[in-house]
Length: 61
Image (cartoon, rainbow, N blue to C red; front, side):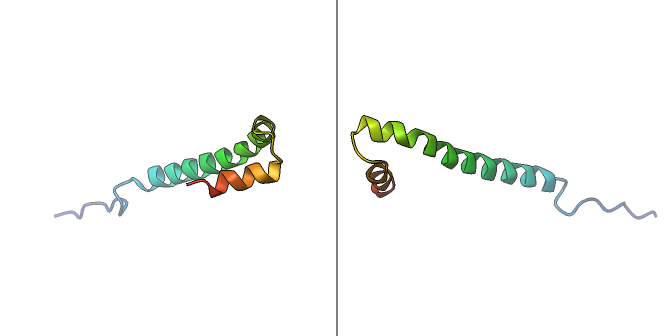
């Protein structure tokens, strides 16, 4: 009787989970950074300062 070779303990899904976590973190950071590019246009549209517009963006429910 020969022993069965040991496989990865997670069934081989560790790299998939790591890649998905990397993609989610990268995309969410990219989205937050890109919202800053739209802030001057939003401030101009609502005829408010950038500070007032940013405060309203985070305070909205």
